[in-house]
Image 1 (cartoon, one colour):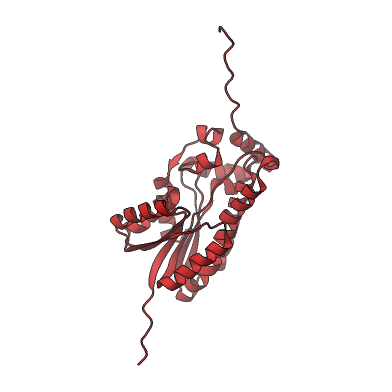
Image 2: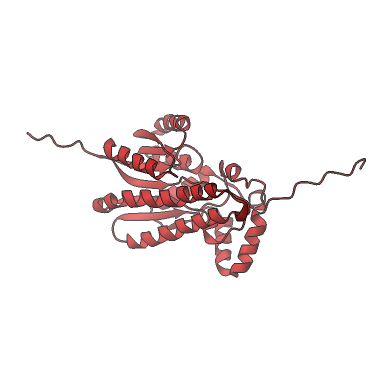
Amino acid sequence: MTIPPPARRPAALVTGGSSGIGMALARCLARDGHELVIVARREPALAAAAAELRALGARGVTTIPADLSRREEIQRLLATLHASGLDITILVNNAGFGMSGPFAECRLDDALELIDTNVSALTHLTRALLPAMCRLGQGRILNVASTAAFQPGPFMAVYYASKAYVLSFSEAIAEELRGTGVTVTTLCPGPTATGFAERAAVGETRLFRRGVVLSAAQVAEAGYRAMLHGEGLVVPGAGNRLMTRAGRLAPRALVTRVMRRLNEHRAPPKEPPAGG
């Protein structure tokens, strides 16, 4: 007598799922009773996130610590998924980070790590998990880009370029998948209250000081609703939507100069004269 293999269970995979927008998206999925796989670098943060997500209603939570800038760790992640009995029917590619400063002065290793995380890992995971979704005739992919995707970003050149890739790649494969039952949504948030600004050292730029900064929960809710409806693109916040539209209409050179001004760091305040 042949024993049939155990039934595989549908699940949602969220990269960068222990904090910020990724954790906020995982909360949306947990609230709706999905089984979750969350991936991040730090195991203690994953454990704390998993406990919260179970309490919110997740059917189950699997945590996989992994550094997605390393190809061998992505392969280990995929092998773990294959052995888990889970079929990923929702993929949230959220893991990523930024860096700032003149490109000529940046550490090359940092720039290449950013590309490996923001671009290569997203591409790798999408290619690995998409065929099974197509065979099932159903699936949702949510790729987290940024309003940075719509124009060049002096002093954050590599980050802006990485998000332009995410937007272009996502829109292209969304069209390829039209009619298959699998949809691709690109979430393009503007400045958001997460740990991003601190890691990228942009908290004191005009972009963050003068713009409207949304919460991670606001961004996640907008992205989650758009993904459920199979929408191609969502830019949370009226001001952010206006900025992206203006950027497409204005002369490219002017937009680039404006972004330079927004991304430049403020000069440190001058000391008052002695006795003043």
